[in-house]
Length: 131
Picture 1 (cartoon, helix red, strand yellow):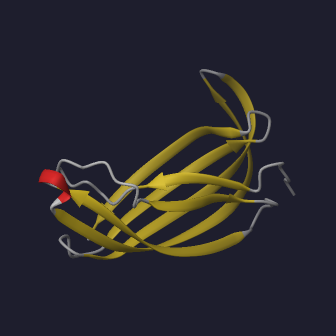
Picture 2 (cartoon, rainbow, N blue to C red):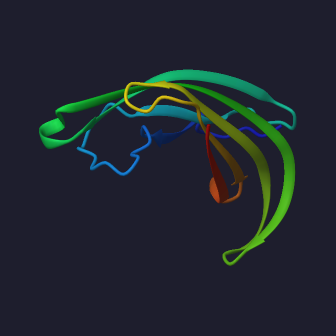
């Protein structure tokens, strides 16, 4: 079991840009990436809607509904250019189920390696699937 001083670590999750110019907006979704205490086999789910503004003066507004699942896979020792780390390996899957202008299913699969010693993610791998 892993406990930390900060019980929440967040990632900004903007709606997928799809090649359009993004206006600055504060309406991005906030995703709880780590849910302490952490232990192998722990799972949790989340859902949110995110809105992004595009175009001239934010004239185009897109809203997407997202479902997320998290799974702690266990401990793993890894070596990266910064050195060797004992990490917690975690799988994250975000499924975008409904968007205003981009119909279809969009799936983001991400694997994180979190180091308690560094108190940060030391590796991440992302795969996007569009259906």
